[in-house]
Length: 589
Image (cartoon, rainbow, N blue to C red):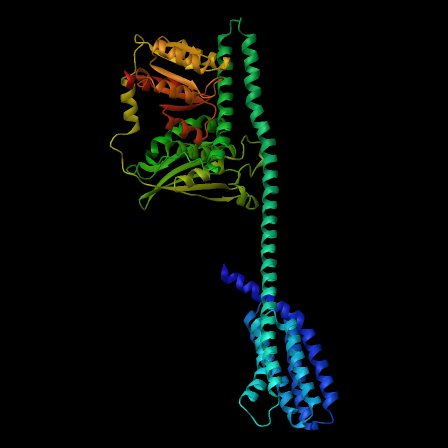
């Protein structure tokens, strides 16, 4: 980076030299005309002609340099070539003017010697303005002009050009001009640095503005799209709920079951949309809830395919699965995020396909890793849209009337990144797409998760052994829902409290087998309830579960560190809830 900045500084310095070169030529020609006019009757005509011709040739060289710079610039040229060529001209030009005092040394008149000093000093002072922006160029002009005169005097020549006083003044002048030139150079360099810093700042502001503008547009598109996506399931929930109310006194149980299923499906869809947004937010804010361990890839794959086959059938899509190596079954991954990645990719392949199309999912073993590939025969992605498909809220087929929030691929890419993998794709519009990622093979664990689950289920309490469950929740609808889910079961004795303090009191009174707490309670929060109960000896063995709508990784981590046995998020599936209750209470018993 420093080398690039030095190059930029040099380019700017040469640009300033070019802008000042015209002034330098005009000054030199005026000084030449003045000297010729004054000394035309003193110096030999041939000597004066030769000297003035060399001065003119030097300025002609500078004119050609200037024209060449303005014609070609530095785009296709090395800036150091321009610098060195200007430096050569400066050395020659300085030497030519330095010769003038020696030419007038034989004149023996104070006026002519004073003229020589005056012209030389004037040229040295004027060069500060025209070449001082590059210190080496100024030195290349000034030192050849003044040093020969000073050295000539210091060597003690009999026909000295100066007396001792004049020599001292010349040396002081030389030092002053060098100091002035260096100060001018530093001033120019500070200006150049500020210029580039300001340009860089302006460029950063421009890029930031473009990003903000793009993000604003993306968020506007997202809000418009999400408004439709969220209202669709909400409309279904409200509509079918109204029909259930109207059917409450009728004798049509099949319709009630149908509408109940519709409400359940719409609720799951709504929950999935919200979860996607929360997942993206948690990843982008650095809340990386990731746990890498051996995962049985085939089991996870078949689970996802089983979940998505009805969707494929409804869209008349053939869904195939190929596994070229049954031996390599385990990969190092996070099971939850891997399941999410597979569902996102396969559901996209189904949604953006054509009727009668095909989706092929393959697992290919290669170099101690497994490549997972999802290939479809669908719409494909236009080349213009391919750079933005992993951008949140961006959708390649906005006009395809396909449900989606535009964040699935963004979540997929970030989730794979957390699992030390990356997603790649190939696509051609109208011919389909192919997405793939690679995960490392892992050794089979000593005891699989399914075995542990079976052992836990073997210890589930029977209907004759009731579980005392205390649920603390301030929301009446939430309380009624949990009571309907758990309170109606023969094997669960359901107790309830609406505040944290009441929950503590009831827990001490009944000594429940398990406590489920809402985090946001009206008096004290769920974490404080947990802390108060943990101070009591007989309460420490009771599993306490957090159930909350706030489920960012920071909240989950904070809750688990506080001592909760589990941290579930709303809405919670009945099966998930029952499995958790049975597992924790069987361990306790």
